[in-house]
Length: 312
Ligand code: CP
Image (cartoon, rainbow, N blue to C red; front, side, top):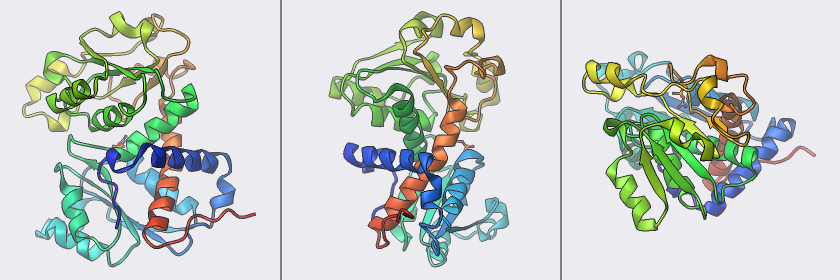
């Protein structure tokens, strides 16, 4: 059985095919509206979420499938002390596929070992978030026409930002990509990822000020400082407003720049930027629904089901 724990579980060719299918679903959702009838998705979220959980549910409902899940772990038997393994083993008897989010890094691997159905990692601690990366890749491809030769600026909490970790892993597989890592010293990208970039010979630079680099970026990927991963509140308060993108700063960038953010945002992008045509973070939200429709379809097909049928 195939699970999706890390974005590198998918080959570049598989990602391309998923994006093709996601884009077709975006253009012609009516063709897929009964393609997963009779199938059940379980969403098991042990951490808060708006976009990931609801986009997975919307994706399955948009294809005629059903969804089940608990609104918070407090209302499940986790609150009585049930282990993650027992919860997964139980829920996998009730559904065809599980999307799970957990605060512990590696929890989806433990879940996959006990599950009778495919597991999708919907975010594990400060580690990875592969389906956000599929959303990001679909957005970049739609906005820029491809990935080759792009300069990506990643800004904010690169240490704990799991979406950044998965995006660096994914984008490093396309030729000519360069990274500009914009972070204060305390929130730099983890050493294992910069070592990975060096080993692969992928150009990257680490800077502290976004103003210095904005004119040469194709993508500016803003991130929230991840309060929930800090060990003390004082450090969070000191660092939380290090970067705030305003219209004045955006004026330094070219017309071709695209501003992305996995959301939720707190203060790092002024709402005054939202109407700038270069701001595409709400398009990202929309794309997340369709690329998750594609992912559910492919994973169910690979694990014993049938590929989505077009209704012609
Ligand atoms: N991007 C993202 O993971 O958002 P949620 O935490 O709202 O799911």
